[in-house]
Image (cartoon, rainbow, N blue to C red; front, side):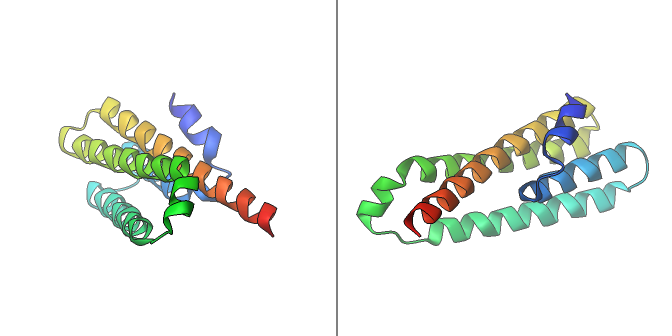
Length: 131
């Protein structure tokens, strides 16, 4: 599972924050990063995702467009939720030092990224078709 976390998404720039979590987690486990720096990284990424979620929720759409985009809006909300659940697991790992909890957290953040990226790709395709 661990190699799949790294291989599958490392090349895609849309997975930048996820990639940074994976790289930081591995660096911490290998003793190349302190727990303090790892925690700072996790907190910075969490803050960035929370800001993005706030901006997303602040978007005001006309009702007809909201209905049209309902599926993507739901996916985006789920993506933010999964990413935040993953961060919570990673924080739990920092307290308990159980690697399985870290892998669970990384998997949840990956699932969240997948959904958010799917929504972005759908909207890019939509805009291309309109343009």
